[in-house]
Length: 352
Image (cartoon, rainbow, N blue to C red; front, top):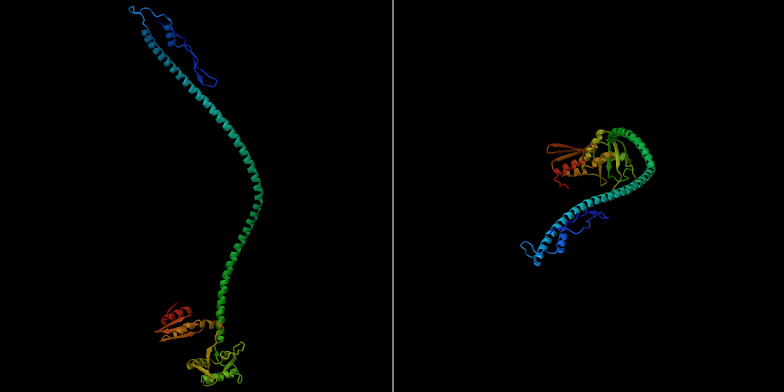
């Protein structure tokens, strides 16, 4: 039995959508041979003169069909794989072209949008710059004026600094000079008051009958038991309003003309201790200026403490200089704070 040959099948072709499709084909070789075998009359004898039996024919046809189907399936698989590879290549190329076209369209759209936005921003920037220029110009002019003013002020400040420096030097010089002149005035006033006395505690009106100068001369002569009445230049009560307070009469200021008489009066007033006139205690002091008096008053607390220390001698020298003799040592203090500290140490007085 001979098999019928079929013409070769046509190549694959693309569909309208670009996808490859298989062409419709005619009957395969295996189906054609099976059909021919079925149409022929089976031979009455084969090989040995045996007749074909129906069962043998069925087995033979089944084997032939399996062989033809296997060959057909192999051919179909190869052609399908080839068509699939062609489809993949065409699809990839088509997709790449499509993506490129989409990207170009998107790029063109974005470029146009960015260009439009840039034009809008440039217009806004130009508007802002114009407004800023209009507002900044007056500020720049004002800054230029301030710069000129500051430059002038710096020049004036430099000149003023030099002037102030000179004034400070001059002020120091004048301050030193005033201090020296003040000390000199105080010294001159002290020298002028050197032979003046202040009598404190004498009753008001006691001097009316004799006059103040004669009354004081007689008082000093009798109370201090002087050899003769001292020679006085002038004598008067303190220049303030008369008071009715009997316990605090005005002081009497006296100028002694002779130095030796002044020294004698001061020595005997210290040695006599308590001085009495008409049963009332009074005191005699040197007449100091106000500045010297205030400085000497600062040493009162120190003198009160030193007075209680045994074997210690002190004296307040003119104008305000404390001299202390203790344990054969001599100390001088012009500052009352240091003198007070020393007094508390030697007098065993607890400090705050």
